[in-house]
Length: 489
Image 1: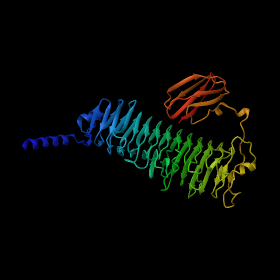
Image 2: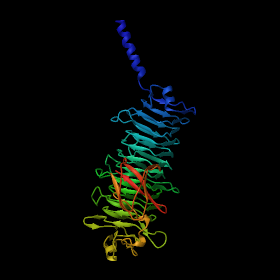
Image 3: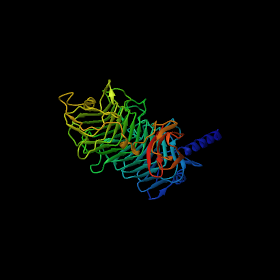
Image 4: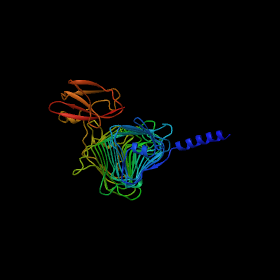
């Protein structure tokens, strides 16, 4: 009987020793690796080759640094959280952070105020997102996918303050929006060259980029991103900037592709400075209800604020082109500072084309735009696609003359107008080589050469066999070159 009791006790003690423990670094100003933590607390992190398994919550103290500088996979047990008060850096070539069990996500990351975060070349998946309470935050060339609610319920990357840097990432198919901040946060992020697709899988009434107020003197910059919707997520918009708390909105939205969302871009509330320039805003109509959304650009403010500057955009096949509500005002082109040059095409609902719907009492300057693409339009034809005082005397006038619509002539047939189709692409692109290009090269978003081949004049077909994502295609000869974005589905 004593032997049985002793044996049972030994089993119980062994089981107790094996239970995972949480670990907090000792706050002594030391730089730690995951291997160091495993040595200090083998029940928190275990190692098998290049696989590290986090079995308990990990806290990095304010005076300590954890660095990952070798290629590895970090598997994190269900509901476990990494909290950083100090510094956390990933600067290897290929790191994967994922759930130990994909069906049991980990809690995610909590980057506390005053922490220093620098993450690059990392895949972050099947976790609860990144809650960023610090302003010293950068994430570059990473993939964030299949993340769910956990450390954050608002966005995969939830920002709180300062000038965070979000560059060259792929953020796709997550439960929540890709990037967000609270209405009362003050964030002027630099969001550059990211591929953002199919986020807000929860299909709640939120856009893929969902931000609030900004710093007064530093703009929020959303530049050169590709933001693609999922047709099944009819509630998910493209970009929303909202000021409901009386703060500042200082924003530049430039050179993005925004396609296939519930709506393209919306700015809600007053702003101090806003520029929407050189974007391609197409097919943002997936909900299909013009009473609820579908604008390429929507501006809605309850009080008068600075004009939103809108120029050089291509706005096609949304339910509405541009809609103005409340006291919102926009400058779509004038004779001094804004060249206009917006192009509109087939923004239609209910059988009527609405390039611009001015549902305000404001007079809108909208000169030097192309209101009906590829058509030599008359003044009446332009009038027919603009809703304003002519249609309802209570509304403000849209001053649209002079307008610049027409099919490109020989003098306008410049290299900048060269393009290929289809885009997005599945397995091939086609183009008419009328500029005597000799070579076509495909590059990744980091500038790495993927392929190169010689091409001939006239019609060409280039076969594409690449993973989904954003690429750049360069056409060149000895005297000229042009680079175009390519989206692979």
